[in-house]
Image 1 (cartoon, rainbow, N blue to C red):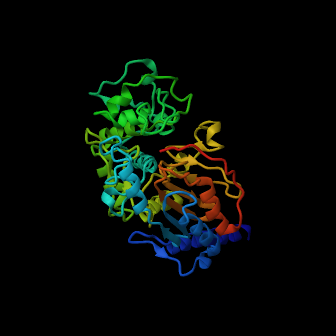
Image 2: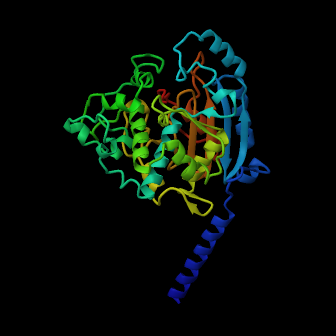
Image 3: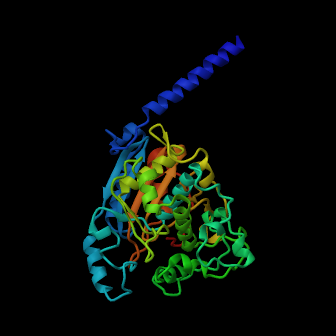
Length: 403
């Protein structure tokens, strides 16, 4: 009798799981729009109030807000700041030249003033996904592999600290490389990232940096290590990250339009050069929300989402309780046992939030590098979650800008 009941219960659970998987909405062609936010358990009045605040400019130059629940768009707004940007660009036209000038209207915040928005450091989280795909395809043995073999033919440092750097150290930004892009602006030539972007060979620039600590001992936010991931992907797969993403990530998800900046050597700018629409960025979040599976096809290896969004390191007190995984930030919120973001405070205001407990994805884009305070990511997610299940307590302490 007991075995029979257990068997019946097991079959029932399997059936309900299969039904849930079958009923899941997959936006491979395009996102489905909810007939009503209330149908998905969302109080639209809360989001309407937030919309009015964003439209007023109180939170700076926010370009879009997108909220998805149960696989359907429940709220989507855009805010036109092009006149503001043109005015500010004109005032700063004599600033640093070149395509990596953040005041160049041909590149920021939209690629060639089209629909593709700069993702900045959200690019890092997408790069992390590509590493996972390469590991799942046996192109890379695993995160414990030493990085040195991937730089054969390049001037790889010979000191013992560099020789001990593993892929996991790069993913978690605990490489030990001496680097500073936290204490000065990205437009300041003293910024390590700015210096890298001004060099002819980004990978060589990173490899030329001294080691400040043993690998694995200290977290230092370092966009340069993400560019090393680009070289590793190239050597491991034989394809530039842009081409590898097109075949193994973007096209399976139905992402048909994107742009990825190249370094002077022609390598994808994996640390900050990706351009996507807000809806297509949300597909990346939806892939992670569904454990790396997309419409019955496993895109990311089993366990990669859990592993890469687990708190691998505690950055520092300045991050107000945030943790870091494999190029993903883990954000603490009361009322949500687990949530993670592609950036803790993406340069200019690029945010991708994934909250599995609420089955929620939220995307914000913007370009707050001028004369207004940036959108606070904690506040933004708090307002979204308040529309789902009432107010959610969260610290509103400001977080530092991170690309």
